[in-house]
Length: 77
Image (cartoon, rainbow, N blue to C red; front, side):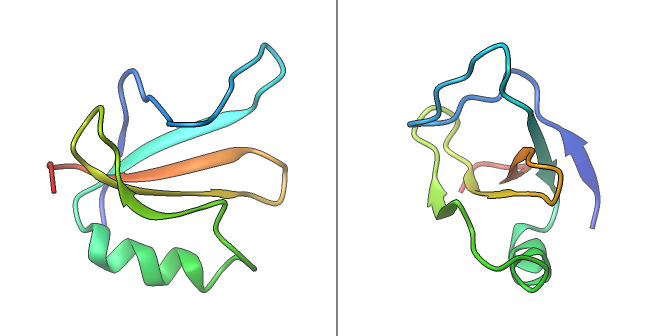
């Protein structure tokens, strides 16, 4: 699985502030990433969905340090 930084990531329903800690990455194999990441966390903050702004599949979670992490597909769904 290859991670690629997501330029200008946009998240529906997430209000950013100067204190928001967020990470956005794109993966070349979204279908492989989802179960692997899901096995590492208790729950996802956002279930898999298609982001209407980018047309890519994505999901989000909180990491142990409190960062809001969004993983999205490299290519449009």
